[in-house]
Image (cartoon, rainbow, N blue to C red; front, side, top):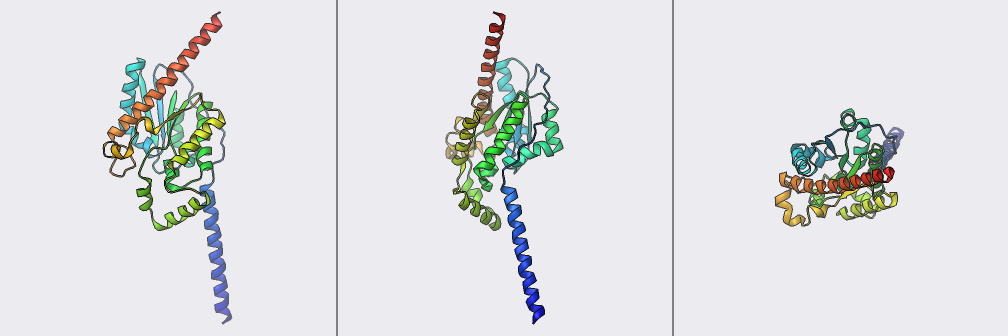
Length: 276
């Protein structure tokens, strides 16, 4: 009788330990990233304008369409343009930031070339996995700081439209259960995309990034998701097809040109001032 009683007690404490460990790991996973000292990226100027595409699967699949935006910019700038894409599918904004330091291939991608612009696709998986707003804001802020420290102009992708409810319905039960808990604690709806868009605007304003960072607004290239779905997206209602990347690249090119001409005007004004 005593042996059975002790066995039940041991099982009970074992369950408590496992539950506590699960909660601890979950809290660690959902915690915002810690700031890391920025590493040095290549600084030597060159005639070729280089643009990095980094982030999640949207950056990963862009590798097949790098020539599109290069052609758009070369026709206007009359200088060589090269685009280089490196994305890791399924990563949240924090995971992207941490992989920039911990993934040797990713870090080499960032350090072996001199980039002038960097398009960042991060946060789509945050909205799907129901990470918190501070998690997203801190991750994006750290990525921006790394870029600005290296004189790279960041172009941050505003959370685009995708069928978040359909993807939510397809989750496995245990993932949906955990995410429902975090939705409850953070007062977050299933379709939380607009919350993250507003959070990005708040971050840019609070940090004073307005003149140093460009936001690629989703409505500048995809103003009507439902009507554009079959034309711009894959069958999964999440990832872009060739037409979708062409539209996105056109919006990014406009963002780069706006910053490029503004910087050139400022440099010319500065040069004229010093010659006086």
